[in-house]
Image 1 (cartoon, rainbow, N blue to C red):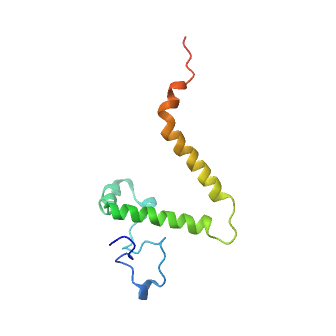
Image 2: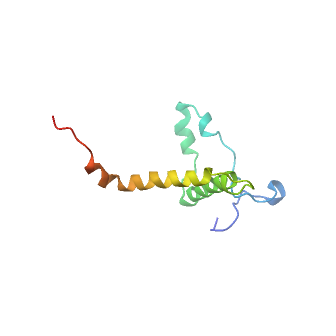
Image 3: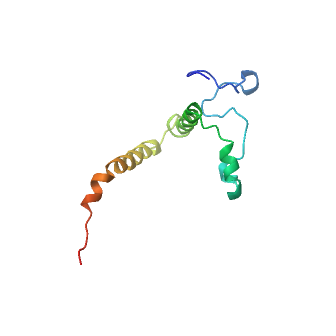
Length: 107
């Protein structure tokens, strides 16, 4: 699969219009329904190539877009999510500098 192509599992006659938020591969057990002793087998069935990981991030992005950003009546949720996400990101990248400014009690 090259960049910009449809997934090889996608068939327009079967699936209809292409939806970038949908996985067209063979369905598997959702992670929430996997039992603890089956986690190893479930992880071994995952495709771990860079293009598969990029596809998973792309599907997650489009699911978020379709749910929060692109409806006719958009609320404030996507803006709050973006603000909170950026706050967490910048806290994580600056944690090394901020941990030296902790208030210690010397007693």
